[in-house]
Image 1: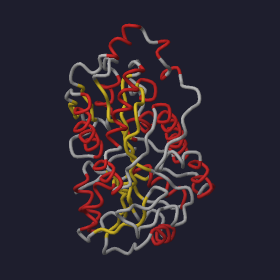
Image 2 (image 1 turned 180 degrees about the vertical axis):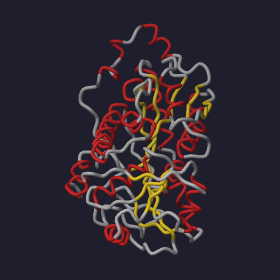
Image 3 (image 1 turned 90 degrees about the vertical axis):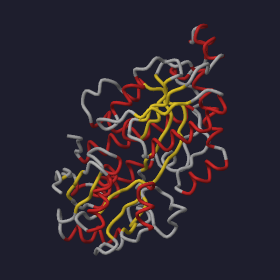
Image 4 (image 1 turned 45 degrees about the vertical axis):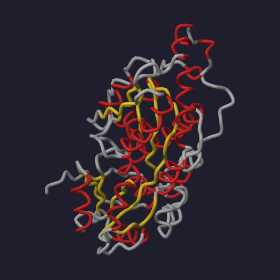
Length: 361
């Protein structure tokens, strides 16, 4: 198999490192793990009460929902976003007594589905299950999106916040994160890291790791996780920051080894695997999160109704047990708290993209 090979430009390696990574993320540490910022004391204009909402919208809100709701997922079935949307759908339609239809709209790094939701009628009947990539990464990596996820979408509720797992071949020479750093420092550019596409959360987590550790590895983007995992097992590529959902089944097969977890707490499913921060990169905290969004002008009453009901779904014992097994659980959160979480995440990634000179081209 022939792969496109590129080197992530890291011209600031000599002058940055742990201090940069820690400083960049300290503001977001509380938001990006298992809690979100405390409620904002003053709601923003976009999420303010019904004083600015027309009486027509208020009447519509009181009857909401009166027909099926569509939740757009910007990727194909089977990924984390699709899983979250279907869990919500399974329970929310019972609460609302209306079907919630999951509509997968994959394409162009999540931009196709996100654009559909952002441009939809703001009546609460088209929602988006948005994730890290399509909400905060694309806006700083892709020119001329045609929309701004941070302006054209209104946050409803943060649903899940999952760690990435740094994987390597079980039969290879890398037995720990310290081994990886030592080998990479001894032979700059000799090791490689994979991603499922330029500008994805796994790509950026690896870029932050290189920046903080002052190492250089070759970036090899893949079009699918299947071929990537095969090459990782055989040692054709050195490491990969994988979603937990994709990593755990592969780890049970014994051909891959977990080196570290990308968030600030260890995973309950992998209690013996240290975090990147524990392994020496203080403050390192990257994750793959998902939340529900609505078009920007959706009435506040509808946003509050959705927030209340989806929080109730997340509190269900069977849902919480599943999420906690993969360290995805988040506490109840308001639209204002989710908005603040997004601001911190956006600032963090924007600084990383600029400092590491990352592009999606």
